[in-house]
Image 1: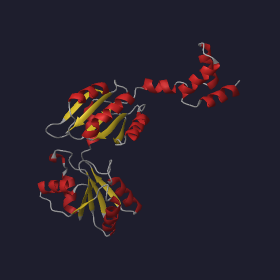
Image 2: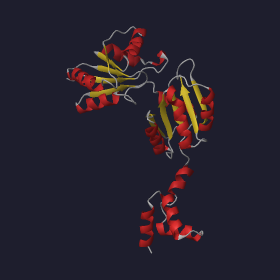
Image 3: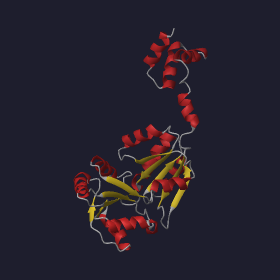
Image 4: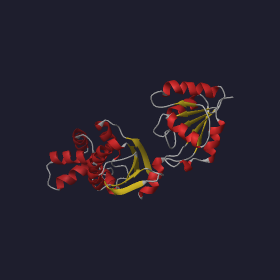
Length: 280
């Protein structure tokens, strides 16, 4: 009979947040696979738990994934932990879960802290609908493409960011989302110096001109207002001919009206031209 993989959430700062069930699992499993064995060892030592550890991270997940699966197939239970918080969220644990499913190995989770959710509920922004966007790319072009793809999303957006990248990320968000968009920046969550700053992107850019970012951040961004989406989608139920004719009625030439309609609908000018004359 195959063993079971336990996805164990560990504290993101305060050791008192570890659950009794998590400690029970640590004591019961044959092996703990950790993103950072040194950090996990500190946690185990604090609770006087002695258990074999193996590393499992982004750079060895293919090799170690096969090794862990072989142990599970041999009937051994394994606990998986990330650096902090819940594994399999923006870390290689996601790949191990997929491997287990492919190999018909049972996976269960031991709930606990998630930095993104803690930041969200402290942000003061809408918590009814939200989207977790994880880490942005280090590459400027890819980062900006990511932000462009979600700028009109009405959901509250959650990002993780490292301190050395924070200023560039805030600058890109300011340009793409607009300076008046509300955000909350959370750091040192659950720790003694926990801090949540709530301001606009313009204010955030000014704040970090004189204050250096410290610690890992969760950035919570207010969703796009419905009016932004309505402005983009207001022509969905209007025919191309009616759309172009409205601009002509305002005094535009047919050529300019077709160009303006194409821009408003987000489609090529040739497509509007062909559709307009087809309906004549």
